[in-house]
Image (cartoon, rainbow, N blue to C red; front, side, top):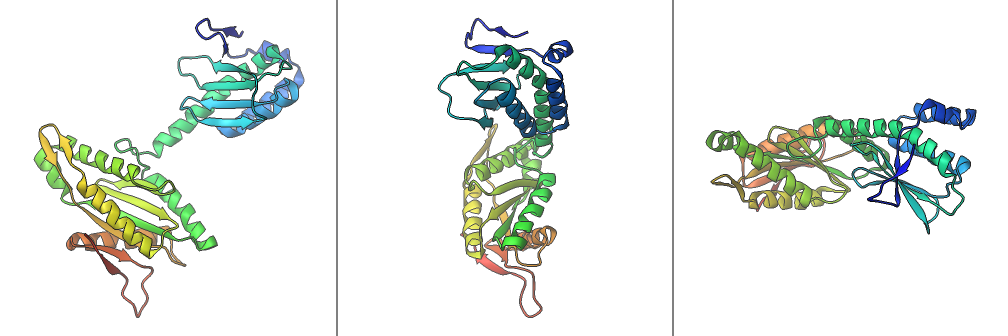
Length: 309
C-alpha cells in the first residue's frame, strides 16, 4: 500500500487505506476513525491523529506541513531522526514528518496515515474554499463578509478590555473617470496597486479589507486618536505616491480618508458609519482628513479635522 519513490528515497507515498486494511488493525482503529470523522477542522483531525499515533504506533514526534508550506501540527520533541510521508494524489494535501527512533510500527503507521489522508484532504479543501469565499479575488484583501465578522470580534475586545481600535475608510477620488478614460482594466490595475500598497505598508496586526468598488477599510488595533492621525496621513501619502502604469498610460490617484475611533457603547456598524461619513466630508475638502473621535454628544461636534499633507 505504501511505496518509496525512487526520485526521493527518503519520502514514503501514502495511498488511501481500504476498509479491510483498517479492520486488520482491530476495533480500536475503527473507533479511532469514527472519532476522526466527527472532527471537522484540519487542526482537530490532526490533534486526533497525533494522540492515536503516540499511543498505538510508537510515534514520539509528528509535524504536518500543508500544501502552502505552513506547519499545521508540531507535536513531540525535536527530531534527531525522521522520515517523510507524502499524501498521494495530484493535489497533495501536504507532508508528514515522523520522528523515527526505531520504535515506529511502519506497517501500522502506513494504514493509519492512509486512513486519515482522504479526511485530511477534504478538511483542507473545505478550509481553502472558506478562505477564498472571504477574499476579494482582485486585490487579495479580505472582503465585506470577512470584515463584518472581524469587526464584530474586534468590538467585543473594545467592550471587554477597552482595547483601542481605529477604523479608516479609504475611497479613490474620481474612480469612474479612470474607468471612462482608460478602461476598466486600468481601474482594476489601480485597485490592485492600492491593495498591494496597503499590504506592504501595514502593521502585522492591522486588518485590511476591500469593502466595495473603490472603497477600502483598514482596522488599526491598539490605535488611539493620535495614532489614527499618523496612520491616515501615512497611508494616504503612500497611495498617492504610487505611479501606476497600464499599457501606454501612467495613472496617479488621490484618495479621501475618513477615520473613527471606537468608544464605549459603539457597534461595528456605528463605527463604520462614522468613518464612512468622515471620508465623504474629506472628499468634499481634499486638503483635510476627517477623524470622527467617538459617538457624538449633544454639546460636542461629532468630528474634527486632521490637516493632510
